[in-house]
Length: 101
Length: 57
Length: 104
Image (cartoon, rainbow over all chains, first blue to last red; front, side, top):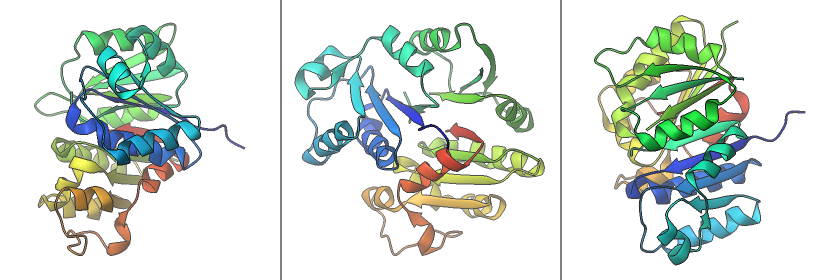
């Protein structure tokens, strides 16, 4: 039996973050540990569908983090520093720098 | 554990720092995709030889 | 035996690379599966897309992304069949079942 896959998506551009979060959820429902990290970009608000996706992801032991303090404050994302992210990536079976920066 | 870092654009400081941490005490290789005519044959060889490939923005 | 390769495509700029890498991997006897999501589904309208479908073992796109990018889901891109207008589960298959993984 193989170990569960651990996947981390990273989003650096606003245009890719929302769908990238959906892709993270898509893997969580396939029985993988799935995480997303919003970097560099500040997002003012998330639509209901995306918020629901994040909640579902959390229910499946996933998480959406952000290196941007405003996203942590405004959107309720989990804070992560660049150093912590680097350490987290070391534990992943798959690392996905999503979209463009 | 051998990591292959593929660069889709010139890596900036954020990318460079993450690569430093991810490849610490590990074997690593790299491939620049942001060139005129990438050698895809060589890239595939490197992907097959690596345990994990990360294609940075 | 050559390792298998799964490619997850998130950018529409990557299609020439996807084709080049797929050709090189196929020449080595690899099995190649490609899945396009979100903005990358625009690539399905590129004339080169049908070429990719011919050389890769399996090509599919996220149908929900395709719709959100403004396309009619009944307008199946050349090279695909309705069955290949799929979901994110295709990405899961790439991660679970393929030896090597590449995102572009």
